[in-house]
Image (cartoon, rainbow, N blue to C red; front, side):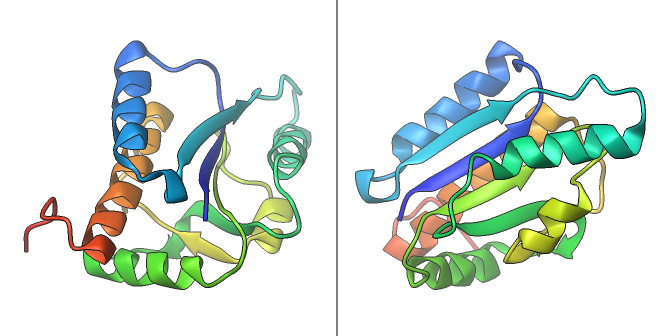
Length: 153
């Protein structure tokens, strides 16, 4: 199972790219973790902007992918619960794609197509930081599943 984060947004600051690359390097080859970005829409109207970004995100997925939408109304997971989700994702038969929206969030088309929704926090955070949190939590879940001592209760 490969893991991909597909995010709407411009190039992030170096510290974001460095942190994401660090966690991605720690993942085993069997669960390679990559991050891909799509451009923010320049449309004036929010609805059209969101729809365009949604199309761009979905164009980076396949019918075999398990889609996890990052959404403030999604389910919040403890580290152990996310490890349980990781185990379940391993049984989907495809890759897992985590979809992060732009400043306006994810379009309804993306939310409708997603297999599940995940909320990182009730707090609002910058998109770059959200990318770091997503990959760190994926890494943490893998360490719990594999018995690695990274996570401490």
